[in-house]
Image 1: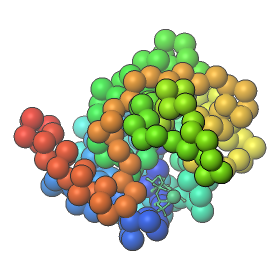
Image 2: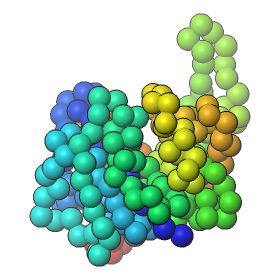
Image 3: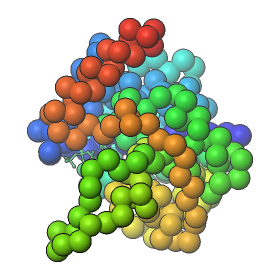
Length: 217
Ligand code: CTP
Ligand code: MG
């Protein structure tokens, strides 16, 4: 099954205070961690960057095709830019945030396998650990909730259809669901945190060094 991954890396990192995807993390850039993991499941990777360039010398895709395209004003627009560069023969398309450098090859495999086994959309979810309240008052039943991560895998035709009307959402599963597709949640990984603020990079550094010590190159 031909599988392509779109890695979106065209954000400006407002909350971080800069382009977090290019920060160093245990010896290589945040983006490069994401690309290495993506390449393990993919026939090809589309990297969406603000300027449509600048991958740097240390990306080893291990023979996986790599295409770089420019991003858009929103995350969804950047995904659409990436989609346009995914070849028509791709049957499974995965979308991943460059800002989640600790997504493992195993996690990519889990979502891809779910779609290969018949799911329309498969996304990683983890338990919510904090108590959640409405601002207006009232506690939400935490056990009914999952926190959603990337990578998210989709049947290619379904993802393309969901983006055809040009909607905007913080993830792609939301768009698929709003166009009638059903979304399967697989086990996510609590370590697969998104780098949003500067503190997140400090935590990711510790986790990434741990991976290196376990022999992850
Ligand atoms: N992204 C993108 N194009 C955009 C906005 C976001 O490709 N126009 C990417 C980011 O680079 C990131 C992922 O989408 O890998 C998740 O977005 P987020 O964590 O919100 O990153 P930023 O938008 O860069 O950060 P902020 O919202 O703080 O500005
Ligand atoms: Mg953002």
